[in-house]
Length: 304
Image 1 (tube, rainbow, N blue to C red):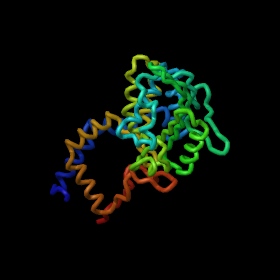
Image 2: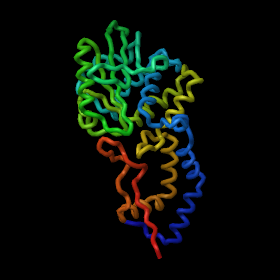
Image 3: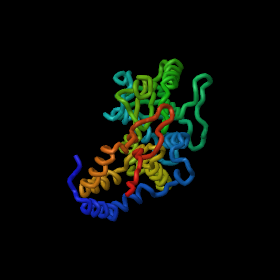
Image 4: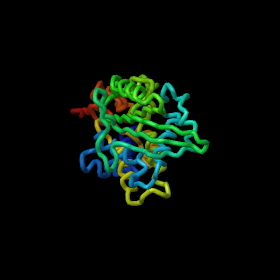
């Protein structure tokens, strides 16, 4: 139900909102430039793959050794991560706190930009192999295929083909399949078409991987701006996609809503009541990603 506000009262409240310093700051935060936007690669999957390949490589110039890899694997325990069908059997994950990785190879990385390609299978966004050993002498080899999607839907046939190849080619190793996608369904099967994948969204990566990395004492200060720029890039909306919301955005949005809830609620109620909201940005078009940004809204101007 619409709040019973006079036209003058609503207009005054709306003007107060758009002239609010916090609202202006919020607008500036959403529109601030970053390197990915400047070069036109905000949602280019290849750049995202290269960034995470660099971050997961213990030899990377970030100087974090295998911390990023361990931190990433810990996300597979998070309640927001969709679990693979063999999660309860993953021996490595149970000993992860005491594991040391060595002979780690990641493609692409900052020295080898090429992705790993397998004839008849495909090209992996990120492919990682490593040997590991824990303090009790448990050792083995790890293989991980990472697949990233931005504005395209996951391909179920591709998911199955990659999984079949990994398990068939490395039957005696620890094999993990990790899918990064902006939106998650109820389980891995409905999200990427195969239950053998772990599925994470970029919000989880932002909250539990990237933000904590910024506070690591060994992080190379010269590359810290790169991570900050990537985090800023995740909040840029492109074809309706907003892959992550920063903590700063959350705090400011909540504060603005608490102060101007009548304005926000009234606008939303009118848009719904008049049918001007076509769909929300959580909807994904078949095979083509989302079509437009924010809410697809038809604007009509009343003629006197």
